[in-house]
Image 1 (tube, rainbow, N blue to C red):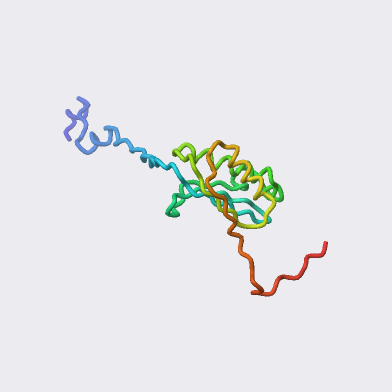
Image 2 (image 1 turned 30 degrees about the vertical axis):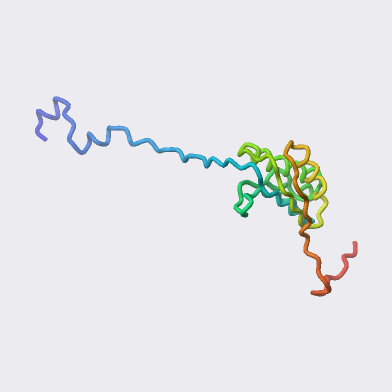
Length: 148
């Protein structure tokens, strides 16, 4: 560039592209599920309760756990934490259009019954309830009893 162009305020071609606005980033489109029926799996362990909502073929739609709902430590294992996790998962599922659910419970934690009550209170219709807790038929040796 010559001195005269600099004085006049001419901008070189390389700098002109830098002053233009960068292309705006597009937001991801949220997947629109129009589910009417879904499976709800409740896994209640001694330490936590996890509620998963899946399509009928098994693809996960949404989930919630007592730990993810703000409960930490031993409070995760309480029945109240399980009911909060179930309400959270069903609120997400109802936003996707779920009206009828098939419930499968697994585990022997304190929150399994309370999570089921929270699901029935959330306004969806429970079509069936199935207990899928693993029961050994005299398989592996049990751990030694805990002494407190």
